[in-house]
Length: 396
Image 1 (cartoon, one colour):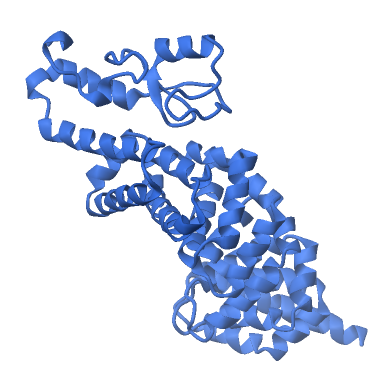
Image 2 (tube, one colour):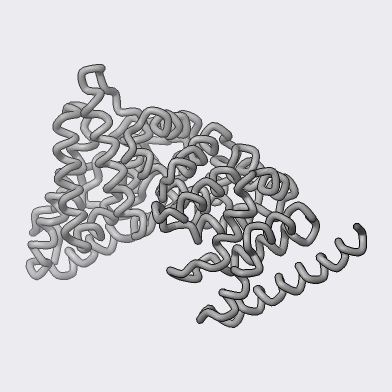
């Protein structure tokens, strides 16, 4: 059906030419324009996004295939195009314009965000639409692009950040991980750190979950390395871990996946933080002790980490307690591997492990229903302790 016989939905028109998109492309700001229109804008010497007026740190254009597909469907189906779906898209587009507008107050933007949060919680199809309309980069821009707030608006600002991060985390699993790379900009990374310092507990939890997402994707590997060099951030994550934060454990574990981050994590107290977390797990306060144990094993590839752990009064004891737990065997294998690393070279580690009851723990584990690989490691550790005991006895 010819577009001239139909009213063109607002979503399908270029903000510059106001004509139907022919080749929609999206800029780093999350805004979409027709390629010919934005190319003319840039060729005229403009270095900003026409709608947001943000400086374009990256002038590249990404084809918006989703929008192109929707337009093709609309042109092909004409009157048969699902009006409810189009109405859904239009209503979400209106919400997006509210968030983008410089004339809308922070209070009204917060109300818009609350509406978006409700929509994202009740319908996965809405989340798909939100992703198609590139809400994620907009939300991240609003959080880390420093929405200006007066002193009287400070409470609303923190609520705004809280809700925006909550919505962003719901959209992350649907893709667009690359938009997190905006945090490589100095000003946005500074905003991230500022929120980690002054944000509410729920904001800090959301930021930790963002760190986990960043450090778990190949698309944001460089950003993860940048965060790993930000000592102040690592220190704050470790403090959260010491306080028993599950989100902190997830962030620290994800950061440790990158080899280049590990030395800095150890330097900022990760070993002591993880030991504190594992010890508190014995009292039933935390349930991510197996993740903490796996992270500890990764870090023990460093000599500095071994020294930190052996010098920690609770270090060996904490790992021994993880070898056999009545509730489950998660973490047992990592605990066994960690003890083999530590006990191979250190008499102090061997003596502390025996004093902490490692022999009893190993026997209980071997009699349990744990998997074959874990039992094999248990036998290997018993053999190591026996052979080292013979060596130590000869050297006395």
